[in-house]
Image (cartoon, one colour):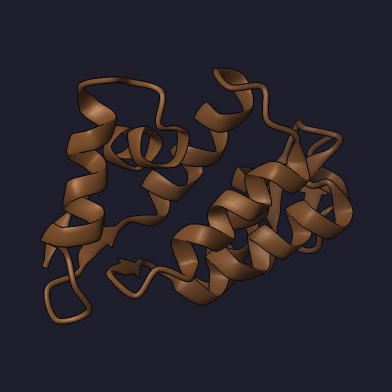
Length: 132
């Protein structure tokens, strides 16, 4: 298993670079396998969502589709896959911020009773509380 950085996934998903995208595609389609998968951290997933929104102007359902594409790839192992899936569903269904949803889910997994935030939008997610 080898770790994959955000830029590898972005080049593969967006196919926006004439030199790097074919390299990312070759890795994803021929260099990785279920027996020798690429490892994607939860941090990488948060970065992917952020880059797709900020740099490529994708909207929530489009970002959710790309996250689902990563989750469905048998040549990838995603850290905290169930939590990433739930955060993706919150993004898709509630138009929640993917990173905020993932932060809250991982905090609960770690045993936190709640997650404090100054972010009003994040405070509407389950497990978040606004710090007044």
